[in-house]
Image (cartoon, rainbow, N blue to C red; front, side, top):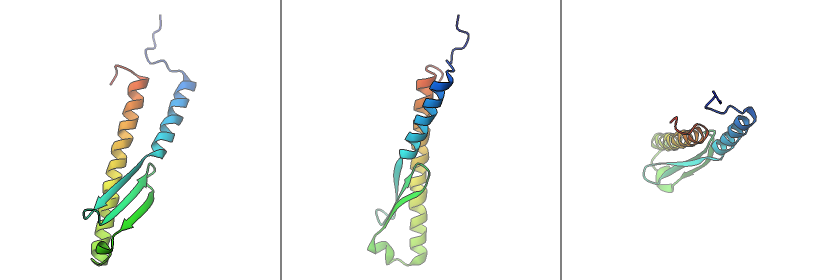
Length: 100
């Protein structure tokens, strides 16, 4: 009789965690502000991969541009966090079916 319903096989758990880390690092999300005037793409580590600023946004002035860049970063960060939660839930559901 198996009294451990969770099957804690250490090697398998390590493999799952490595796969999770790899998937999280591969995530990319782009945030937008001012329509499409500013876009920022972040990776799974919340590092900026690219920033695009339209001529229209650049002409708005420094303070407005700074606000748009911050808004685009925040938008991308929210998308990254949502995707991370989704990936983690997917792994948890596959690892512990019926628990979630």
